[in-house]
Image (cartoon, rainbow, N blue to C red; front, side, top):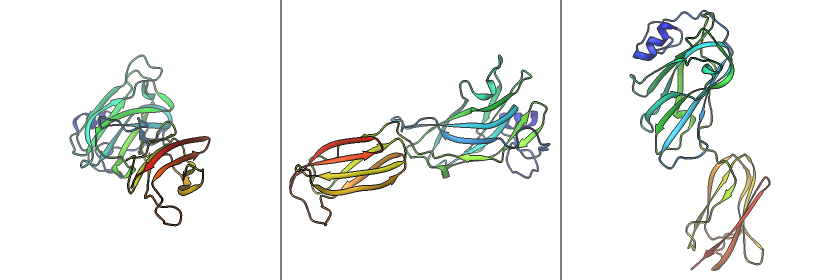
Length: 268
């Protein structure tokens, strides 16, 4: 563990390993309590931050008598500007401990952040919980392929060392916390307009346009959709591909137990 923490703090590369990386090279994997533990990278925020700040968390599942860990997060430098890495408040390693763990991070290698933490109170942690939060500046919508946990180690209370091989990169796209149907833009419109809506969970979705007599004019969406932020364009055509007349139209979103209706105007 001492060698791992030096590598984290100074960005040093050790020599020789089955799993290449600054934290695992040269380490003797003796096998410990955490061969079944896994790391999960996920979003901290559910929505897009207006200031372009992206926060990601790494959590651990099925930890057993965990004393310390270290790993490297690689990211796409063309899309993200690294800001900081910090331990999550009430993170798993500090749970039930009166003395904070020793946490270190390094950005010596461009496009990579190496982090590690070790309990120094002679105790250990078990269970599931968050570990580290990474902050980036970006104008992009993150996708799983933008990030990778290259390698890492987990050390248990008795000094047994396991490589981190069970890694999950979650869906990093923002997910809203509630249903909503936005006002179409532009409105009034000619010849087309965009309708945005958001879904906090996956399910069957219908987005239908009606005239003021309640007659169905056009079905824009009728399918099962993933949670997220969605948008669809209406080109002013009916189901038969004919241009509709100027006037006021109603559009309705139906999803799970949610329904919302708005009006829009087509002007020629």
